[in-house]
Length: 211
Image 1 (cartoon, rainbow, N blue to C red):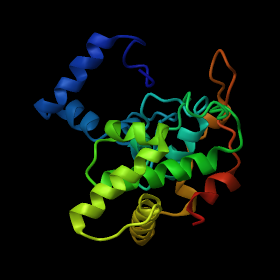
Image 2 (cartoon, rainbow, N blue to C red):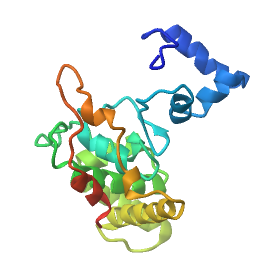
Image 3 (spheres, helix red, strand yellow):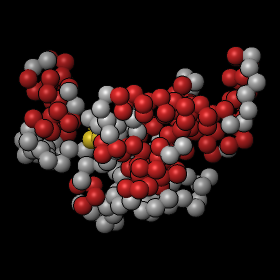
Image 4 (cartoon, helix red, strand yellow):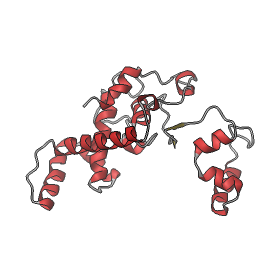
């Protein structure tokens, strides 16, 4: 659609194109290699990816904490690493504010890194965010499993240790700080009707790995 080869909103044809992945024809192989590969092959300039990983449906111009996660996640634009969305349990959080997003993203990335490492379903872990005192029950379960006393900071410490390890891997294979950025059009093109752009300062984005 972005390349002008398909009409905007033509979902039926888009679905048929996805089905071509299984046929392993030229278009199917192109699409199966992801949006970065497809966009570059078709000469598209506005490609919604970070580190080769396509963005999900959460627009970082409104959900700016999620935008920080997209930019800095070691796996690229993966919303499951830390999707910062409005929550009645935290009414003071403004997802569209240009500042204050870094700490939120950092906390969520560490939390979900721990949850993933424990093999727990992301959705099952959400109540533990809304009711933090429940986290002690999860920590007690892990402690009982391994027969090792664990303190109240176990999840946070586990999450940060995972992020450090993943970061070291990325650095070893050539990723740099400059790769922790959203595509430029999110910074320049306004999201209607709000008029928002992704305007979180780079200093705040780069602070994610200050731990």
